[in-house]
Image (cartoon, rainbow, N blue to C red; front, side):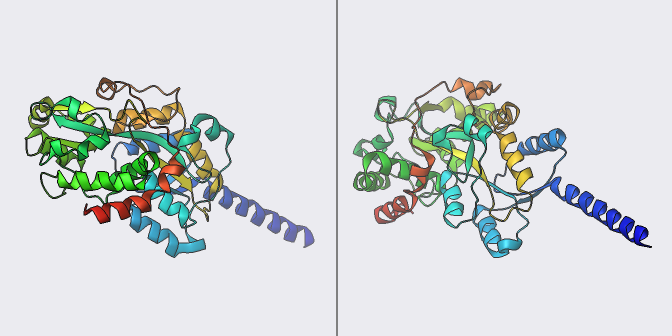
Length: 339
């Protein structure tokens, strides 16, 4: 009887261990990256590790609010999103936990990581102008866009969008808050129209001559370069790209990044996923699939259109320093009337 009882205990323990192993073979990913090419990225992780990814997609603010509401019962292991400002919001709310990984520290440059989240790809905020309507020498720096010589020539998306807030945060870090606000006022005075649409809409407006110059994330421009649509090919012919601030602090760069959530039920799998994102193989997906630059120096991108933009001096401002100025950038934009 005793032996039978002990055998039953052993069987239960084995089954429980098997169940735990099965649970550890899962990763619950909350993603605010809405790029179809990421499908291949995630599928490759499962192929390499056997860990199944359950993915929930949504807007950044919705996912953050969901994680907060779920609290310690949250099934989420990882939050992945774009822009340092959004990652910083999640971090300040205490949603991430520190991750210690020698591999990540070796492969992700120090200025592109914080103790609680890591960057895995970069995108530049470039100046794009109409070759026929705006002279290149007039738009060499972000600060030039506030010059009265460009009155009625500037198209921009909303000042409340994280891409522009991060640019403002960089300007505050380098030029100070007062000068950044003065820049925003000059920029608003130069608007050809009220802010509307996304970066691609601004590029099309510049190409059509509705305005002469804009600022765009680099990967939107590369998308147009890679497009086979006649309208896109025609638009590209009218456009020229400028790497801003090459003689000063360098072109503003932002990131896609991710962190392990505070109550992650599968922390080991989550850390493996972050380490996978820093592999050369995964880095190539970012570059070739979504026209972003890898953060790992050894990663090789086979994206001719991305390479055609050439090399440039990048702003080396640490992401943590950038993120802490986001609120100040929003206040400066509000005072300047950039809605």
